[in-house]
Amino acid sequence: MSLMKRGNVWWAYFYIDGVRYQRSTGTANRREAEGIARQLREDAAAMGQGTPKTDPRLTFGDLAARFIATEKPKPYHLERIKQLLPYFEAMPLVKISKGHVREYRKYRHRRRKLTEATVNRDVSVLRHLLYWAVDEFLLPLNPLARIRMPRERPKRRPVVSLAEERRILDHAPAHLRDMVIASLDSGMRKGEILGQRWEQVDFDRRLLYVTRSKTAQGESREIPLTTRLFDLLVEIRQPQGPVFRYESRSVHHIRRSWLATLKRAGVRHLRFHDLRHAFNTRLMEAGVLQEVRMALMGHVNPQQVHATYTHVELPTKRKAIQKLEAWMERKTQNLQEDDDDYQG
Image 1 (tube, rainbow, N blue to C red):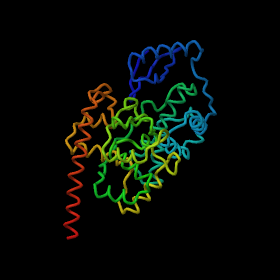
Image 2 (image 1 turned 30 degrees about the horizontal axis):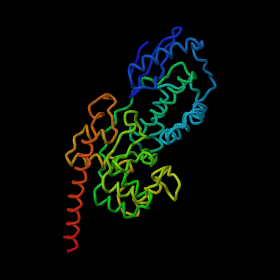
Image 3 (image 1 turned 90 degrees about the horizontal axis):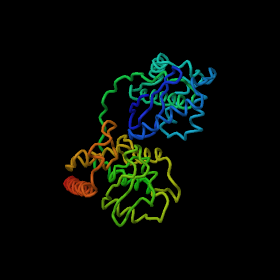
Image 4 (image 1 turned 135 degrees about the vertical axis):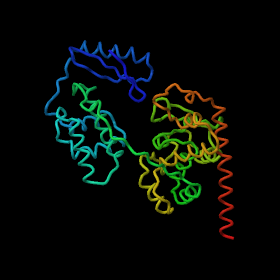
């Protein structure tokens, strides 16, 4: 039996009756993974689950339906599955191969001009579902386990300027405006913002605890509040429940509202995620070190799970936020002076 790390999680690989199996241990801790792996192998052997009884009639469409009904997938997965279904829906799982993926790439490029990065996302989700099928004993192995992805060209990320920020805030509806400020001043991801609850805001210590992180190492990270974000939260404060709401209801989607705001503001196309990138860029320009920026953003390098930036202490984070506010104050003052000169 062996262990291999994929992303932040250890996977166990073992043989039963000459058949190789792979199972996720669900943990980033090596010692825990070793114990879980042993138990996984014992359970599989005890249940007599040698070779999974793969139904040759089971199609990718059937698998997708089971996955959606069982796993409560994220919107990202649902969007990619929507792209995969027209091509793979009627295809039996046992027949899916790397050759089919090559043909799928040609199919996607014929239908629309796309980057390789976009099609890579589709293939990654296809591979993810096949790994899930292996875990559910629907397939003996994943035919795409070692598939190579075409190299993606580095894409320059747009940086939201202060002038663009001001126009966005001026034209955004109240609930979206609050979320924009939260992203710009904390670097939280969209999903983290939508999942943030009042129980995780410490007004006495002026801290926000992120509890709905994308990565395991980012769970419950603490972010000192800027004065702007603190004042905003004080103004809309509630005893419990979701922090960001629309007419007293939880918010689940903001895409339409975001795009409409950009159009009204006359701002170039930006993703909401670019606000998080702006937070990181502004910290960098304010002189904050990389490990501190990554600790604030919960952005952990999978190859460096125990790196120093996962243990940055709170006083250092507070100093970083103070540097950000000082940088913002200088830049805002310069922008105002430029406006005054232009009007003069």
